[in-house]
Length: 315
Ligand code: COA
Image 1 (cartoon, rainbow, N blue to C red):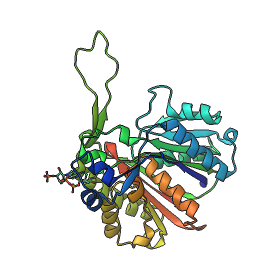
Image 2 (image 1 turned 180 degrees about the vertical axis):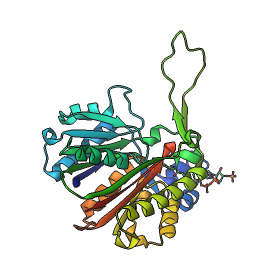
Image 3 (image 1 turned 45 degrees about the vertical axis):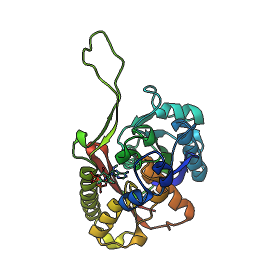
Image 4 (image 1 turned 120 degrees about the vertical axis):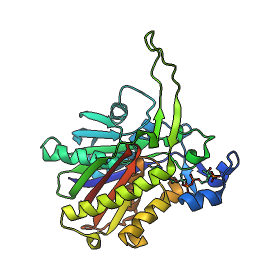
């Protein structure tokens, strides 16, 4: 397939590190040096579906497509307001999509899992125009008294419209199952038959383990995927890497021995917006005109699962 339109939407409320320091035992200095994050967009009165719909409409407009042109809609999100129907159905109703649609819950690499699915549907002859929306609000998954998690995240939505083409050169999805490293639990309704007393648990993370997993999964996958299509680092123009932590991005960059200029980032302004992260970064770079026709882009993302994925696109 080929990406012909991108879009994104952000909550209006911006929370700086100084804002967090007013009610948490933390500091701008700690957050900046450990993560590279200076501020994040945080949902207040916006809904996930509003942001997802806005990002989708912007991507459709850039692509020159109408909602009725889309024949497959994949929506990536972790925590939606509705258990059922899917966020994909809710956004479809909002913007007038009429095709088959579904949610995927693949945490931070969700955009790359969606790309992988879209490309597979395309190769099977089952889609010509596909919409991907990644909409996440991880700030509503954290305990805002837990300084080790809530400082890391921001909210938002990113979207892409894909059509027929030969620009997705390779995709790969992976899992190294390790639930205890990064998880959140929401308890279903009680019944007369469930005797266990359960409670909702906000996002829990073993930060150092996730950090190590992210660097090792990303570097291995990028090198392997490039070699699978007979390319090497020197062929790559840009790396669009999940914006989780600047130190993770730096470690990947150092391992690959690639220059800063190949790694666009927005983590300082957004924090980690889960699956929306890569999609928002892609849209920002696209709208700035960073990518030129023929550029080779390598995507890499990682998160709860522990899941990871990589993709290579010719722009
Ligand atoms: N402000 C101030 N101090 C904080 C803090 C905060 N927001 N969060 C944790 N600390 C403290 C810890 O309590 C600890 O104190 P102690 O030494 O007295 O026990 C100290 O800082 C060091 O904590 P540690 O967890 O070892 O720090 P770290 O260097 O590993 O950095 C992360 C923590 C979370 C920033 C880092 O592990 C990380 O980024 N991991 C990856 C997380 C991620 O990206 N997850 C999402 C992937 S999709």
